[in-house]
Image (tube, rainbow, N blue to C red; front, side):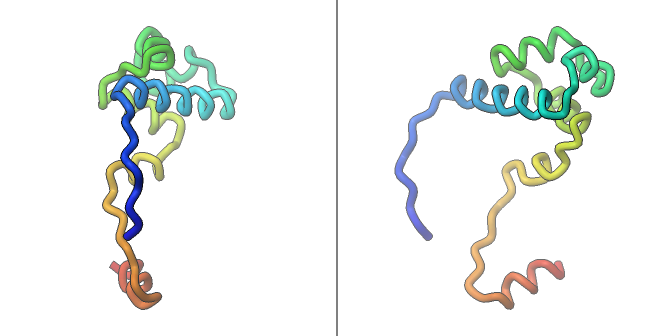
Length: 96
């Protein structure tokens, strides 16, 4: 396993990075904050705050991701990544 250099990122920087990515996805789907509020059930004010500060509850973040059909992103959140040694390992894992 290749070691990665330590990177010091504050939680706030990470929140802003996630919010910035979220805004880009929302805009690429041509969905306004108001429309996303209706689709997700998350208040317009919460969406605005999230996009500006990165601050949001986990339940609201999941609702927003589902409204934008980001299923794979949610499924891969905190997923343990398996390292494969052989192609047989990959095939075996796919069957499970």
